Image (cartoon, rainbow over all chains, first blue to last red; front, side, top):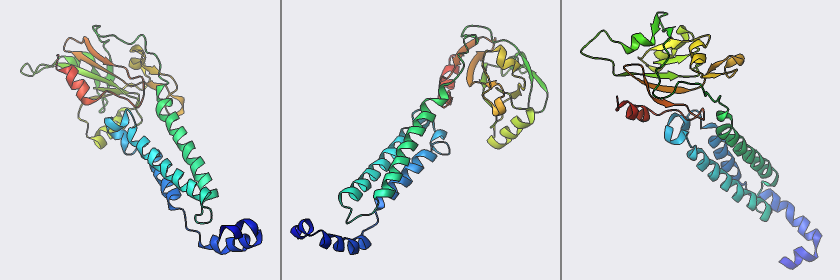
Length: 169
Length: 89
């Protein structure tokens, strides 16, 4: 009876409290938030291991999109049908956290990794690689020249791949 | 061959854990890294100078035939890229 609700506030109030007790939990809010947490945390242990999901983290963005969509559905239910669904406050907090997580993820993946020195004086293609001698894992001195030359004439060295990496693995 | 500021012991642990069988060299004071202009100042633990990621392919004469200087730490040379470049040797 819509007339009762609009004309008789006391009846509406008294009717609201039993309804509030019966309000359903808003599952999409929590599921969406869990998916956002997974989207945020999964990059390094899972998706960064495979070049196809590492170079452009589309898999993570897919999970972010799914999580935010569920949060949107849950938030809309909480605000448009508050008599049926809980989650106005929790949904607002979870949604804010989720958007912040997405923003932070974008900052980490698209900005922090790009602060690299220009290396303008690095050796160029066609130049001779400067020779050097350094200790290997057993502590023996190894030179670039010794890796390029080989003692086995049946298997001549075709080349050397030089990988500089950051360390601390 | 791989070069970093890690000590021989640290590199040995890495090789054992990851199963790498190629040569790992230690450049603890980043001398070679500096000579190749690949120093990333203060980017290591406790502000140590370390190498930026870089890959070079040399032919048997020591001439550089291919270089990958990534613009993003997350994006490194893929094995198939290096193998493709190595086909020309």
